[in-house]
Length: 251
Image (cartoon, rainbow, N blue to C red; front, side, top):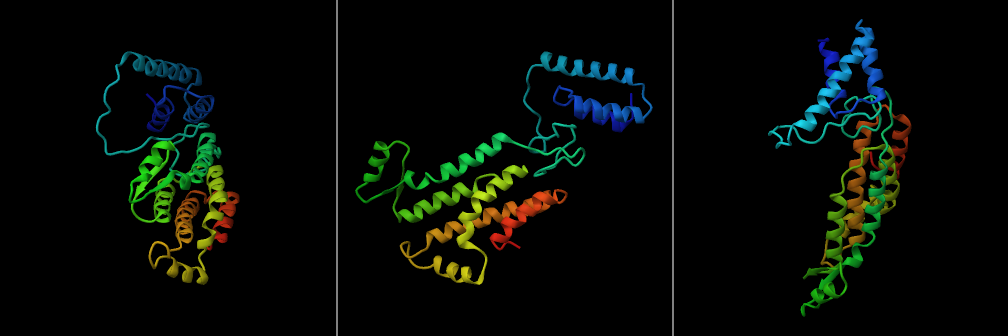
């Protein structure tokens, strides 16, 4: 009915079965430029939205067809434009992405991290660790080896499995809490000597505190690199990220 660009915009706006005021404004602006009668255009939009919602209520749920595409298509809540991964601001309308739930998850992540040591129980040769795990609910028995090594392994897995945040508030909050934990592994000539000594010797001789700081360093590096790619247009936030990067010697 309309040109391909406007039809594509309509389909994107109606993909979730809703039409926000901002999406309407964008569509009406495009229609006006194209010389389309706005009253007629509004009537067509209402009809398409009705058809979309009607189809959702009448069509029984079916298994999604196989596809080579993975993940969800994310749209800006303000204008409906498709958002690229790790974007902190909409490239179309400039809307800042904020995620309260994600911020809470970061705080919960660091809170849970602080409890890892208390949840790791070393199982001794008499297998008393298993009993302790039963008595103290939530404790986790580790069979064999050194307790420090067991704690290090659990902490490393916990850190590396946490997804990289993608809103600027989450990125800055994560770095503000992670940088002090990564500081012992700061990239310098001195830390190179510490690193050499930390990884050699038996479990009791190894410096696990330094080794876990290296894991935090790797996570911070990942976030700084992602921020440099996604925040090119957000100079102010990028300056804050670079400040944290400088504290750790990340180049």
